[in-house]
Length: 118
Image 1 (cartoon, rainbow, N blue to C red):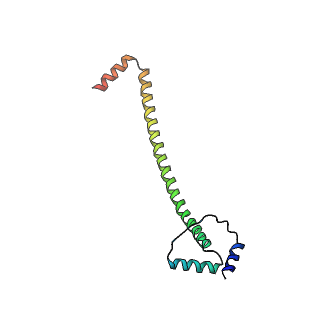
Image 2 (spheres, rainbow, N blue to C red):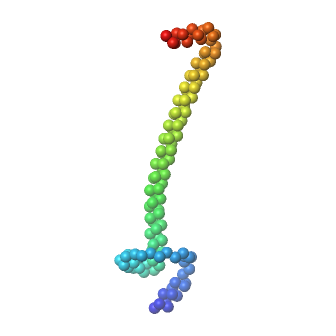
Image 3 (tube, rainbow, N blue to C red):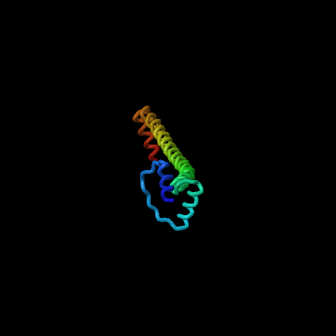
């Protein structure tokens, strides 16, 4: 019987080169062994399939997280753009005021400053 199992394994090249040692409950071991026997595969293959399904499920959650992260980044960018626009508007107003003062004569400027001071 053991020879038959070895022959079965020798015919199948799995490409697995890394060892993974796990301690599981006797119940999980029985379930894995039974499922593998029903599917005519190794317990490793059952675990790999379960892992792929888990990753696929988690990918959906990860993509949702990425969407939220992108939404937050867009909101931060929007706030920065608004702040930049507000600064630019203030600078334009200041520029216009300075242009107006530049066009005024020194006498007009001193009169205006005196009026503003009162």
